[in-house]
Image (tube, rainbow, N blue to C red):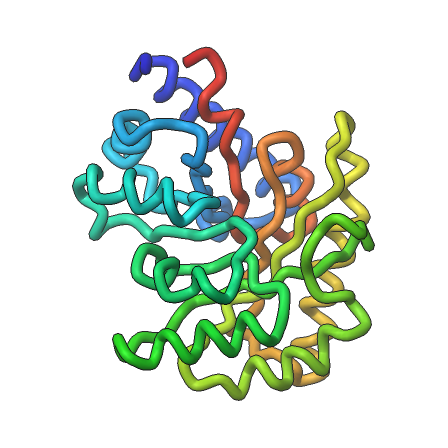
Length: 232
């Protein structure tokens, strides 16, 4: 792991976030960079934390259980779970993570609320929406979102942060724009229709190849992995 390359990559990502926010007439401080550390070791993850990264993400509970105890200064870090979540893994995920981005069914949301009862905590969640209509992707269908949110918002141990989506992979970042725009429109629709509160207006969308487009379309949380680790 080359600390100088890592710092240069991180600085570059931050500049690109700021530039994208400026193009959308937004405050860069309103965009949270989530470093997706699933592909790197504890040393590299620690180096990012030492460089001031405040949010990290993993997609597998087992590998996170091995890595996270090796890290220091974790009290300064918000830990995000971004992988598919099975109900039998919810208890352990709640022990390891602060926010879950991949809530793709009411059943999973119910299980999160149930498992959060014993430690007396409230779990932050993003509801995943399949805006692209891809059969292989999880998430609520846009037309069923309102009814599902109505039940999720009754769960006592769940705090809805907002909506999340994954755009189909494409070499052209512009191909993702309609999907990000659709998620932002859905968020506004749910808030205006009193299906969500303004406090749930966060949007988790955009990854290494398209996060700038996501920011231009309203992303508040971008999940960046490979772009941070180029050249390491």
